[in-house]
Length: 176
Image 1 (spheres, rainbow, N blue to C red):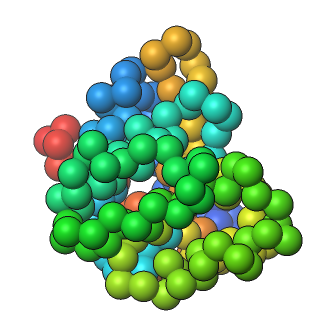
Image 2: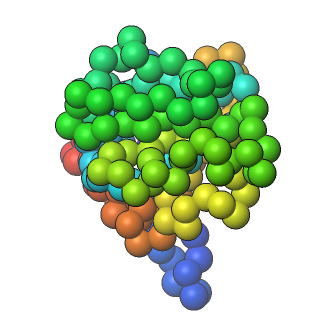
């Protein structure tokens, strides 16, 4: 996995915010999820953006593994909408909004996941529009080749910034 900090402008100053990398396999994507989980705290929200087959569920499985949850329990929740995984360092709430419209969100109980003492992972967050939590980690996955994915990890607020900065610090320690 090649990691590089992306520089975005913040009031005219260079400020590393996003992490941009290329995942060369589903194993690399899963390991990225494990690293995210290592720094996750209760109440963290991770939104997974990308087309079908880009590795959103693979990344969610990696987060589960990193939290100490049985990897076999993590499957795409497309037909169930919300899977609650307990038994790890933190609970994992895995949401898949693919089949929902914004007006159907209220019946899912998804807001309770945000208020829990766990980590919430959302696949297809675009379905929620402005209902998404303002402070979350946005992970964008994009096809590059059959097994390669471009991955961008960006915080949207101060809480998520802490998680992304910790992930970036890990990458730099690993290279040193």
